[in-house]
Amino acid sequence: MATNGIKTAWAAQLHTAKDALEDKPPMDYLVKGVIPLPSLNMFYGASGTLKTNLILDMAVCVALGRKWLTDIDDKEGYETKKNQVLWVDADSGMRALDIRIGAMLKTYKGNAKSPIAYASFFSPAFEAGRDPKLVLEMVELIKDLKAKMIVFDNLGTFSGGKDEISSQMIQVMSSFRLISEKTCSTLILIHHEPKNDNGNRRTPRGHTSIEAALDYGFGVRRDSDVVQIETTKVRHWNIDPFAAMWTFEHKPDTPDLNTARFFGVEAEVPEKVLNARQAIMDFLKEEGRANQSEIISNGLNNDPKVAKGKTITELNWLISRGKVKMLPAKAHNERQYTLSK
View 1 (cartoon, helix red, strand yellow):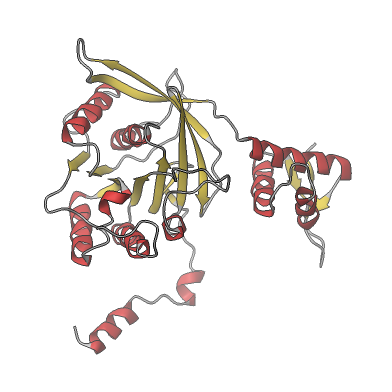
View 2 (cartoon, helix red, strand yellow; view 1 turned 30 degrees about the vertical axis):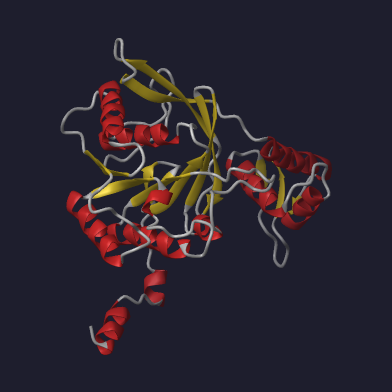
């Protein structure tokens, strides 16, 4: 393409103030309140935390348009929007996927026409960080399938040999973002967490560009057959921690799954979150009302200390749950907050 042709193509893609001022429809979702559509997301955790099974369970629920992580009575749960699913695997192998997906479809009463497609170890291999042509071919495949939920398991196997702890991952993550944007779909990447916990904020393994590219990052940890999930990267709305219990039955005299699914269970709220919420509530009970700066300052001086970002996040959570009331702002004054009656 000539230089002038590139400039013309770019110019046609520009938005203006008119576009910005036009009313937009509400953000769509794949899993209501959890996974936006379109978006780029990641579930990560140590090996053996059931993260692949958790997302397979989500994928089958999306394909069937049924609630995800319902309670034991199959009532409460996260609404999903029925869509075609594409699962791209370079980790589990085809036999494992056949068995796991089959067991979940059987459990949820799916059938041979349920809209889920999957492949293990594509040949030629798909590598998001090596050849831009492969990325465009993946875009075309997704469009042909009309898929709106695409899962890549796992990030390292699709990086095209890029150094996971270097800025080379910028190209990899940009490729996944491009796929999401060009297909207006939700991408979910499965990944690992650092082997050594240095006590800092929880993040996916590798370069900072990995987390920076995400709309949502979900840290997964396991306690027996219950997995706890918390958001560690948030671009849009805040998501409370949630939990799921793994249940299954084997085929007689085999290790193969016959039926399998997750149920939603009560989440274990991290202590740092509880501390932040309690610090805000105690301060407002004592002061009656306060502005955001005062609430943040109280958190920083609290024992244990609450970081500014955590205070703001949990203040918004308390407001959304009706525990704290935001008072109307007076002219030239900061907005104030008080406990709800």
